[in-house]
Length: 139
Image (cartoon, rainbow, N blue to C red; front, side, top):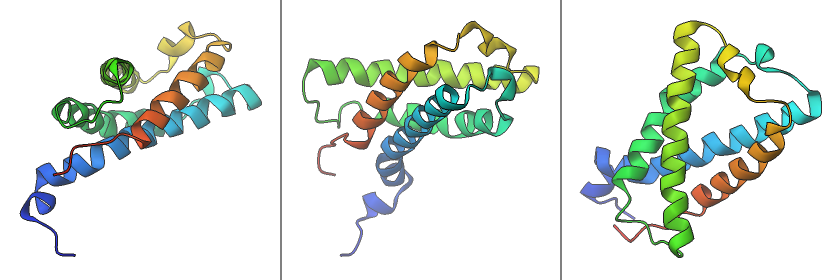
């Protein structure tokens, strides 16, 4: 089927890509926290490429979710609240990981104890599921 001008535009690409970018970020975060729980690595062991992924892709995902706010077919108040919680969490995460890259150290993550990863797995998985299943109004 031929693509419309909207689908070929930057706006169309952002509309299609940003929820998937957010879903990939939170799916990766879920896997990282599961890995931490299984292997027991600490913030000192974290490679910097993870920070670069978040700093590069995170703003695209967060801005995309803000831009799409009126196009989302929310499944209730809980999803609207979750939408903005994801935008907030992702934006703060981008700032933290940018700081890590500027400082050249993951020491800022030392405030999160090992047990935090149990909680993180739950909410990262929930944010990933919500992002993978995000429904938008037809273009």
